[in-house]
Length: 425
Image 1 (cartoon, rainbow, N blue to C red):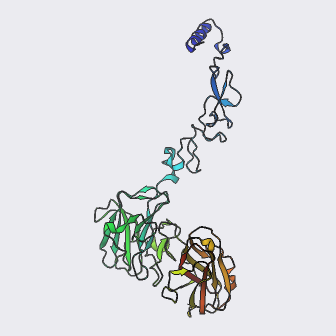
Image 2 (cartoon, helix red, strand yellow):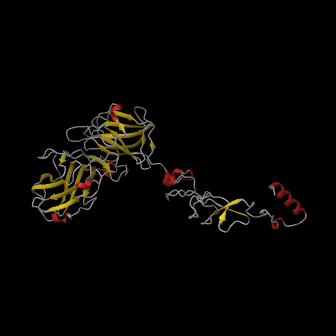
Image 3 (cartoon, rainbow, N blue to C red):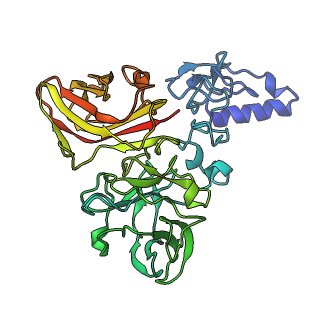
């Protein structure tokens, strides 16, 4: 029976006073039901939201529809009744609620949601001075959502002595990567995104200076998006609040950074702390532990840094430094930071020995094929053996020694830095 003919019959019967809803034709058409023809497909609707499972190939059936089925397969998650094409995107649950493939803030339902408002980028980390050379300097911008177009933004560096704009970098056409970190700096810097030399920039000055990120910069003024200045004593400070701390003299390739990334109270002295190593393009390392006295291995010591680690040599390399005479008489707590690059850190053993001969294993051939060991024991990572063994000892004397050995062939590496932090009772 054709649909046209069925409609005509229904109309004729209705004109005779027969209830149309009671008509059932031999080929399966039922007036008033959700089914129409005996070759219809029906799809499982487990969650009862009237949308069938998109993975169900369907079952052919006449009328009525089989129990628990519907006439569509548009449901992208048939186990969840709040997920279907008629649902609203929830914006903060990391689920595609309305089956349109767009999750949370990417969905137009969420564009006005408070959690989806785009945050402004900030100046997140600055490495403006290192020992001897300026070839590893960089500035890192951060924007938490990532994939942020910087067209219309300009980064300007101001001289702290006279307030003159030393240089400006137009960031039009540059996009902050998906992880939220953008690195602008020297070609030798890891994870570099923007080579500042193509903008005529060679470094950031070491003394009290400031950086300002503008939108709509016209060469003289613009809308300030973020500003950071560092060092006490600048004649002209154009940062926010009070200056960030100046990098400690003699510290190997350090940086100042926000901890954690993106923290912004509009006061540089609060938001920025000295990191104990730079992390361009990555989350900032913990700031120096509060209350601890820092003892840094000297790059000009008997074994200069970076120090090569002999391949497949259990004796390894020993990096010794004298305990400072200006500390007190006992240790209440101690942290050790190591920064090692190696082709296979699962080959490495790393331990610390005190002036009186106490030893604690920090790292014992774990980590497999990872190529970097960069952490602070016991601040970020638990050491293999407790560092409490050093508590109560005198930190002064000769020598505190970091022992690093490579216990297999085939991969090489070097110790880039190690740092000891001590707190007194």
